[in-house]
Length: 296
Image 1 (cartoon, rainbow, N blue to C red):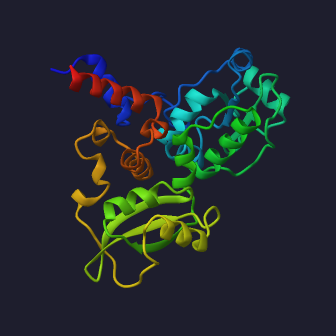
Image 2: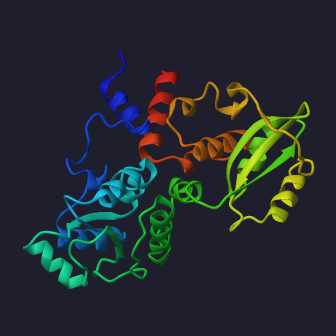
Image 3: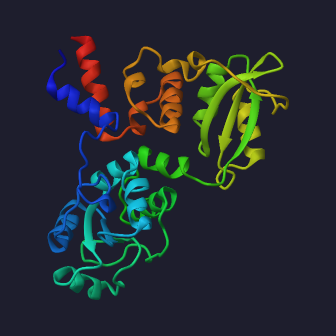
């Protein structure tokens, strides 16, 4: 039987929620403070931004959808809890929370608004309306961390990049698509790689962010990494056993990684860099616990 502590770590790393963290779906899976002043003091001590959510509770479909899609996104939940001080304020009740609305000139009965504050209650980045998607919140969180001169964890960058709505695809031939996945997956701007075949030759299909990595730059980097020029033709996906092959038999194989996390960890393992930079704290703890058990 597995020790209870290991089961808890593994469940967290696999994004399992036996019960919801919050009874209100508008709040997602984040552990929130409801005390703004205490949170501002904590932000000063820990040099972290305050992640201040103004939310209608109970709210409309947009409010509950934001709770599910954004505040329930496992990588964003980890970043909100570990990189920021999360505070939730209801925008549809009287009393002390209504006073906070007045203080920040926020409208009542409004759609979700997230503001990033320093420990003095000042906005780190300009307020923005209508940011209700994972890419937008992740991008703003990264901007707030950068203004605060705090590190941006790899998994938060993954949450931003993986949710970019504008991507393009390219296919490259490689003598071994396992190596091709590693080389291409390590590039900034690449969000996914898939091993496959074109006309019987091993290839890697790449999904990338053109706003970050131009097609010309991608082709140049691919050729520098021993991939041949971009190829055309019908792409046939390789079997599952040939996708991110270096993960097989490792502790990372059991973790519920997002596709981009799998790609980045696979590249790190193949190229000899540190895969842990792409993991959440819960995932790192579960991987360490599994490694310790294997050695014991």
